[in-house]
Image 1 (cartoon, rainbow, N blue to C red):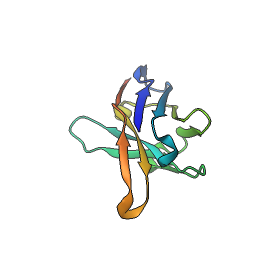
Image 2 (image 1 turned 90 degrees about the vertical axis):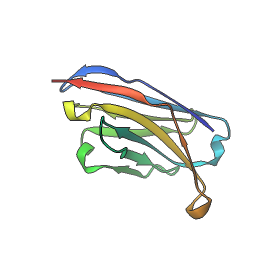
Image 3 (image 1 turned 60 degrees about the horizontal axis):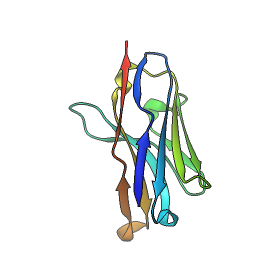
Length: 118
């Protein structure tokens, strides 16, 4: 499975960006997919995830601002980000999961930079 992330960039505070992650390869194996971010000097953290059935989870810091979408027909997972703030500046990564429990595996995209200016 390969994941290709795109859509990052520079935006002013209050602006919007949409990130997209395209999966290829043995994608039928993927169940949960999600977006994570890593700011300079900080650990990588979950932003939002979505199951194969469409159940979404959001970190508290992005609720009501970000929305995760999954298009199984196109094998993509997007993250619509509204009202971006300087503290959202980070490298954003998409991740796919196959299997569950001890049999699970994770696949990461290459990361896309999001920079929010004040």
